[in-house]
Amino acid sequence: MRYLLGRIEALDQSVGQKVVRIHERIETVQKEFVRKDELLPHLERIEKAQDRTNQRIDELFRQVMKYQTENPSCKKALP
Image (cartoon, rainbow, N blue to C red; front, side, top):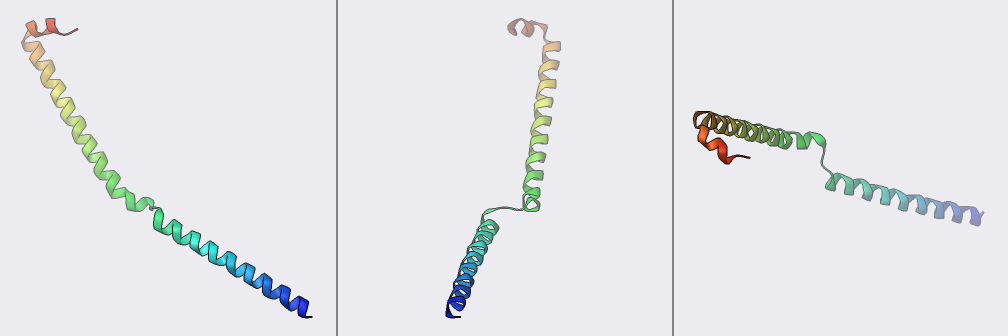
């Protein structure tokens, strides 16, 4: 009978230690990982900045093309 009680107690301690380790892993994941919805505002801001940059590049390209059209002599310098 004592043997059985000892085995049950040892098993209980083993399970308890495993539960503690699992909870530690859960806490680590909660601390170190970011949820997607927390990143969404940052991604939207980056996308808007990229759109503005693209618009500026497009406008610059239009201005260069217009200048080249108005000044045919500058085309000679381009490859």
